[in-house]
Structure formats: structure tokens, C-alpha cells
Image (cartoon, rainbow, N blue to C red; front, side):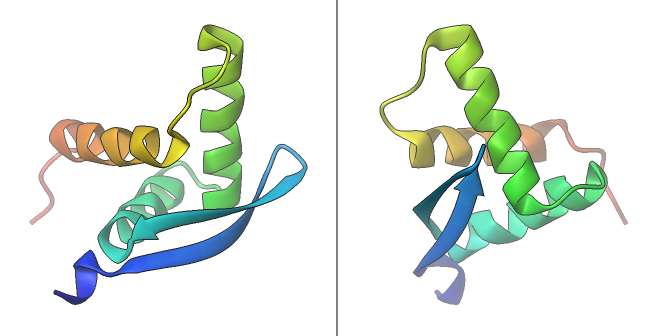
Length: 81
């Protein structure tokens, strides 16, 4: 149940400080995605934020979008033994 607990983190999205609240499991997935892309979690989230603004004019629920991206990444990630 520890992975289900919400964790708030201060992040900087494209120069703006904000707080993002996600369950611990999603923070771990974001760390894996960032590691795979050789960047920080903040850089990864800034990229997502920038792209959603450029392509769709923004999103109402950024946390929900991040959760969907995490699940989609897990579905596409190669199996690691």
C-alpha cells in the first residue's frame, strides 16, 4: 500500500515552480522514464508540459495526463529480466 500513498513534490515546469501530487508508484515510474532518457524528472515533466501546450493548448488535469503517460510507457517498455 506504500506505493498508493500520495506524494507532493515541488517541480519547475518551464521556469515556473509548481507542486505536483502523484502516488509514489508514479514518481518511481517517472524516475525510470527520466533515467531512460538521461534527464531529470523535472526536465521530463517540463517537456511533457511544453508539448501538451504546443500541441493541444494545455490540459486541465496535468496529474492525470502524467499518470496516463506512465501507464503507456510501461505498456511499451521492453521487458527487463
